Image 1 (cartoon, one colour):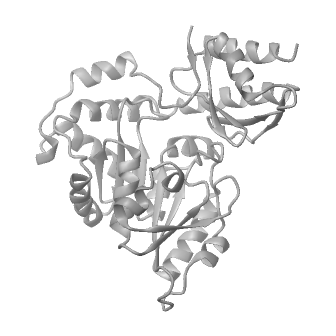
Image 2 (cartoon, one colour):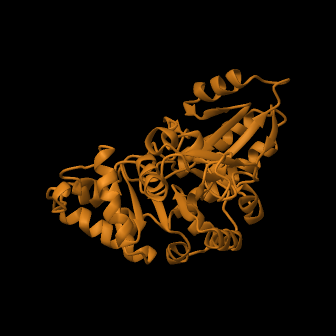
Image 3 (cartoon, one colour):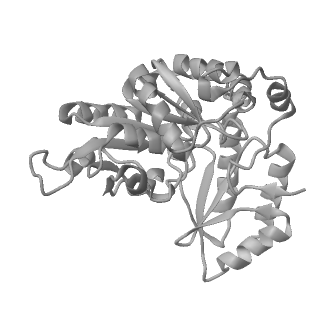
Length: 342
């Protein structure tokens, strides 16, 4: 039994999802004639209470398109130092949009409204970049799946309105935050100018993210997606997976959170583990006591038991629970970790 806890992106379509994909009605989405893509985009726009939506091959392309829409070359966006758009999108902010990032030293990937306001450059001081956008990530990947306080997000919205800034949400794992905090997509739709939502993480789809925003922004986004090479033809086979996941997989992400918290409890009891970050959703980040065991030896011990996890650098290790992580796998991982105390 191979157990992959490297990421929630490793999942494979369930039989029901595969059937939905193979029986999908398709057309040419570049001409906006794919009925399954159109249905997914309509469903997502309705779900978030936004004017329109657009299907993308990846979350990175979705975020990069949103940044392009909200900024002009030479301008600057504000984000936390842990933000995915800064750390894990290949420098696309500068490459694609000619924009720089003002990094905020927040807590577990989350910054306060006060910090955001302090990071805004004076608009009339032409020596510094013009601040034009604030980017939020929920849940925070590098922050260990942490969920934002919605009241703080509302305070940041007020700061954006006060200073005429756009407000974008990288909601790669927003489904996890919604499930954990008992919040609704429409709450987020009402707050943000644009939202990137991933289908291939918590919902278990093989490919795809969706950008939701106003009709005007989505109309412009189609051109940017084309420029970035994101136009797809019979994409309905992929969109059908998204439609299936919205109906069948949204509620079940709470199971991943439960398993992650149980893994965290066992890790906290191990003498070889120095710290375990707070666990809210499906990501577990922890540090070893390297005076007792090296990261290499720890990873090898797990690999010998056919368990794969990932190192994040700076001494941190990560596990991510997901759709394909079964109860039987969970029992084995708990047993293997517990045995490391012997």
